[in-house]
Amino acid sequence: RSDGLLIKELLRVDKIRSITLVDIDESIIEYAKNDQDMKKMNNSSLSNSRVKIIVDDGFTFAKKTKNKYDAIFLDLPIPTTIDLSKLYSKEFYYFLRRILKDNDSFIVMDSPIFDESIIKNSNKEIRLINNIIFSTLSFSGFKSIRPFVDKYKFPFLFIKENDVTINKMIDSNSLNGYMDKNLTEVIIKNNDELNIQYIIDDEFVNSVFKPQKMPVFNPF
Image (cartoon, rainbow, N blue to C red; front, top):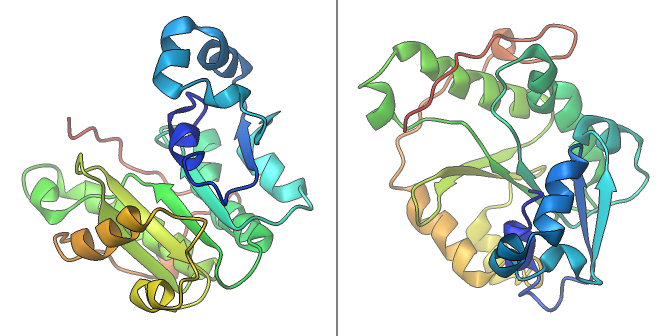
């Protein structure tokens, strides 16, 4: 995310040697980089020597880059338009899977998925969002898709190409250097607190060639 707050947290991990921020909105990047209040909030993270900033559309960057990454953190806009929905498409997820470095690499995605506690008190149509996201990720080749919530109860997805469990990864220390130990514990602990239901089927797969219309919903 171009406000620099996520990068501030990642920079706490000394073993992370470099971070690449990709965002299409240069004005937000410049604001977060130069505004005094924002610099206090993000600890001037966007000016850190370990951070490389690329102004580009995320879809285009993932498609054309030749680099490989140990971890990818996605903080994407809610797909309220067809153009934005490409960031939730099978093609985009395929590009991301292609640029992951190895079997220990992973994706953390700030995702508009919904727990049944929210769905039961609202329009049941929003369950379609769960179906679309999980189906599209699965048909893009990802075998492990684990939902979790952070301390503020916002939903995220931990995504890997292979189906190695997070517990096993922690035991083998393969997340060391890429992910804070506290976060791995949060994923395991909070995963069981969620009741996220979905159907995986090709009829729900979102593609740039056959975009799905996602219901617009704000639970707050």
